[in-house]
Image (cartoon, rainbow, N blue to C red):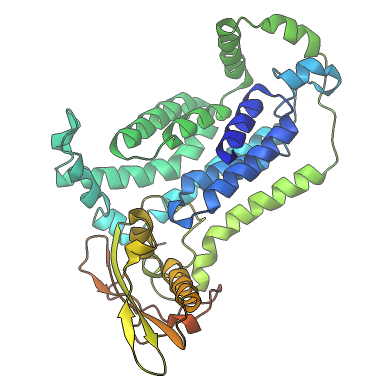
Length: 385
């Protein structure tokens, strides 16, 4: 029911039917689906949530929508430029911050983690052999960073816009071929069209009109003289505050000590896209604090394969899982519980290292925004942002 509701709301948004209710429903349902299992977190899903939140306050149904057709008083041919610019800025933040995040020694000087991922694509026609070449790994690393940093500005500048859009298409089609990242490449290709002039959008709408036998000329004649009615400034304030937070929030990692890729404190919701390859091992033991009796936990009894993999190298998952084990075994009649973990993590091709202090009873540690002192030091250094 939840997924059906989300899908139906997305369809209503697309056709502009009961738009405000539909976009709110889509934002709430999609974001809930995204957040209900942290192991499936992706920046791509977060981006969709951000854009759908912005769209709650934008007049996206002002023209060429069922709402506009049914109520011409709320229709308009022109809308304020800031409504379009807010989406442009959201896209620019995603790209530029993703580029900044790539300015690190692992990505640029070691071509990691692409050096791990690309050789596995040996079975691709034409590209398979190229993916085995080390120079290709470095070329992809450097070009990826340059692309993310430059593409917002190339799209904004009219003379380079078409060239930039071709780059967007090539880049995202290539990433779709190489990596299993779902609909994201197509979403980014379509989203880039917002940087083009209104004349291009009208041509797209003309194509849609012919395909679905819609009389666009009649719609234009009805709304061309209508002007967007100014709303209260509350929408501008909310959107401005939201975008300001988006500019600041990715920098919160600076408040934490130690290596970001190791501790992942401040890593999520910061547009750090595909920068790490981590593998972990986590063996939990449950101890009776009074008698000293202990037993090991079979993680597969409680987690599926993907959840176990993600839990093994992410500190907050490890802590949450430890507390879950404490609650579960307490409900089974065990007393004086203590939970410890022996864990090792390998980061971007390095040999595995001890990850969590095995002498710390995780049931005594609470989840908070404070630095997790029970994470052991990273025996290396990754330079960069």
